Length: 628
Figure 1 (cartoon, rainbow, N blue to C red):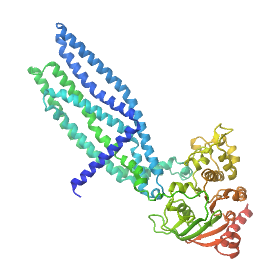
Figure 2 (figure 1 turned 90 degrees about the horizontal axis):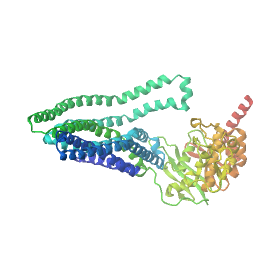
Figure 3 (figure 1 turned 90 degrees about the vertical axis):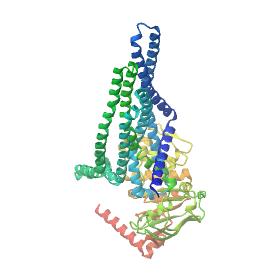
């Protein structure tokens, strides 16, 4: 590609970015955007009107005592000046509020783009790549963009309007005044624009290192790491590492800033000399009688206004470019689900509310993207409709990976997964996930109320069902399905005992309380159950549902397992082999394949891998009880 073609692409790309940013700004609040433009125009026009009216008054001053016409003209000029002052002050009063409101709305619009862009990604592959992490980090650098874009865009409009009028007035001295006054400011603006692009490019190149530096800063305020940071006295160590990584990444940017400062210093020296020429010429013409007092005053005031305007204006383009330099990352994240989804969404309606044949894994092979190690080597497994299969195996065997494939967070490298004989890749992705209720091994502990922690199981699929009651502690409506799910999961008693009942925020960070690991697990189980009830899910997946439960609560779950899973096709994953006895049959996953399949008693009798694991775990449990 030729250099000219490449340059055109760059210009086109910047034009598209500008158009998209301005379109988003306008959509954020059309009324506020129009108000901001109007106030900018008024603030740009008013000073020039004041200059002309003031010069007119000075020019009329000698004739006021002897001419009624001069007095009438002076009254008109004074009224014009007063009106212009009122307009300018009114616009100046309205401008900050309008700008702030528009900045907030623009910031909210950008946040929405970031959120929807990340949440609309159908799979998890992007989140396990440093590319998306770098994009999110650099998109965060645009957090000052809303205020800067609004203020600098409006400043440009105001100053350009004011500058054009001032230069037209100053041109009474001669056409050459316009380039003489403007050339220095244009040179500084071009230089700042060029260096702003270079700063952004250098900073973007070091995104990974800057993200790592920011990670050290965030560690200091993260409660998950607070104990070890204090135990090992890591505060100074973290601060020094953060400063070192940040300084090394920013060193090229600072070097270019120093170069920019030197170049602007030379340009400004020439600029000051150029500004003095019109003043000297105006003074000479006034003394020679070729320039009237009114014109001299108008030129003098216009040059002052133009000089101030140019000083403000020259930095605005570079600042605007630097502020918007990382908006492309925001738009890239917003476009990612459409441009690079990594998963085909599918178009076939979701599976029926009740399966007829079941779930089948057929020769499923999988390796995580970007890795050489194959996790699953050809898994074949049938879970007949309405039954439950427990999947066991050592850590790293790939049990949770099967869950991710079942939820279509990734595509199998080979093979397929079917529901009633239909490849899950053919189903509409949203409808497929609506038919699956899951409790993950690493479930989310939402820093929200107890009610919200359970209700998220259906919040994304239309909200709570009809029929509510009022929580006795908070007066907040609570849907009966929440209570029923909490009761089945054994979470009802501790929720009722919380300070504000269902309305208690489950996070100390937000002024609430925290729960024990077992209580959180019961709450997550209730979330799965309410999701099943609200969304009529035919598939249940329980990944380590009793890992944090004590023996008594686990026994309660064991007794109610049939009720919890009635009518569903269930995949149960657990390291606790006492738990898997709840399932219809047991599958043992080893070396990426199913190596044993059968009922618990039959597998124990066969003396294979499952029997070995079961007896080893049972012996450890007996030893712990004896030590206690």
